[in-house]
Length: 87
Image (cartoon, one colour):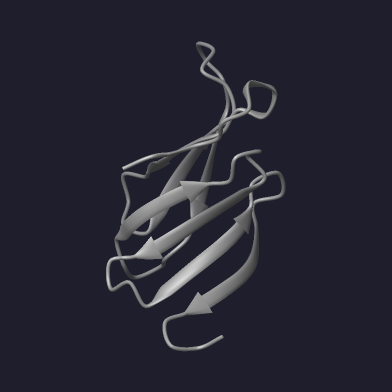
């Protein structure tokens, strides 16, 4: 599972990290390019990832599927959470 933005000018690739609940964000595929690490679900494995078309936001879902967390890719800050059954 990966998340990939569609705009070349704002490239973002999101991959599951090696540690449970983490995501690796790459903003370039150049050799030696910097990676960012984000802890999205502290006690759960990441089930799915999505990156918006423009690469601004990352959505992650835990293995239980009860919570969708939204993060700002540029700042790595948590933006919002959606819970199944709550709006």
